[in-house]
Length: 313
Image (spheres, one colour):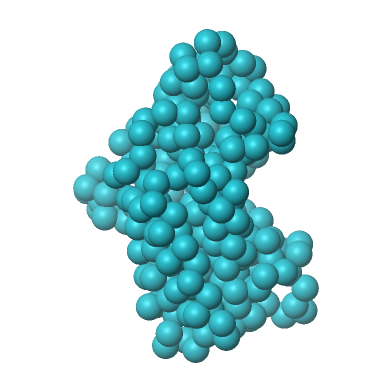
C-alpha cells in the first residue's frame, strides 16, 4: 500500500497546480470585467478576491486592480497566489520525486523556474496577457507530461482526485460569487453589463465557446448555472468533476481491497447532482446549494486525508 505521505504529496501537488491555473483565469476574468466599467473597478476585484477565497486576508484599504493582481499572482504571503501555489506544487513534487516520471518532474521544475523569473517584480499592464497565457500553458504542460507518462495506478488516482476536488471547489465558488457579489444592482440583471460579466465567468473556466455550442449562443444565467453545475460533458463542471473523483476513488478501492467513508460521501454527492435539475436548484436557492456543495466537498477532502492516512509516516 502506498505510504500516506506519498499519497498526500501527490494529492496536494495536483491541487496546487489546478489552483494556480484557476487563479490566473480569475485574474483574466477580473481584467475583462474591469474594462466594462468607467468607474468603481474595486467592486470587480472585491468579487475576484472573494472567488479566490482570499478577500479576508487582503489587507489593502482600497481594492485597485494593480494591488489585487499583484496579490493574486505574486505575493508569497498569500498562500493561494500563483507563485505560492507553484512553490507548493514543486515542493510536493520533490517530496514524491521517486513516484514521478522524469517528464513530470521536469515540466514542474521548468514551470517553477519560468514563473520565478516572470513574477520576480510587479507586472506592467501590457505584460499581463502574456504572463496569464504562460501560467495556463505551463499548467497544461505539467498535466500533459503526467497524463502521457504515468502508469494508471494509485499514484495517478491520487493526483486526479486532487485535481478534480480543486476544480469542483473553484467552479462552485466562482458561480456563488457571481450571483452575490459581482452583479452591482438587481436593476442590472439581464442588462448588457450582466451579460458581459457572465461571459467573463465562462471565459474564466474555459467554457465560453463550448457554452455557445450547447445553448446556441444565448447567454442566460440559469443556462450558465446548468452548464457549470450539471453538464457531464463540460470538463470544469461539478458533475464532470465528481464523475472523475468517483471513478478514481473506485480504482483505489479495488487496489486497496476496501471502501472507506470517502467513497460513500463522493457517491452521495455524485448521485445528488445526477438526480436534480437546474429548476430545483434555483428553487432551493443557488447560493444555498453551492454553499452546501462546498461544505460537502471539504468534508470529502478530509475523509480522503483521514482514510488514506495522508500524514502517516
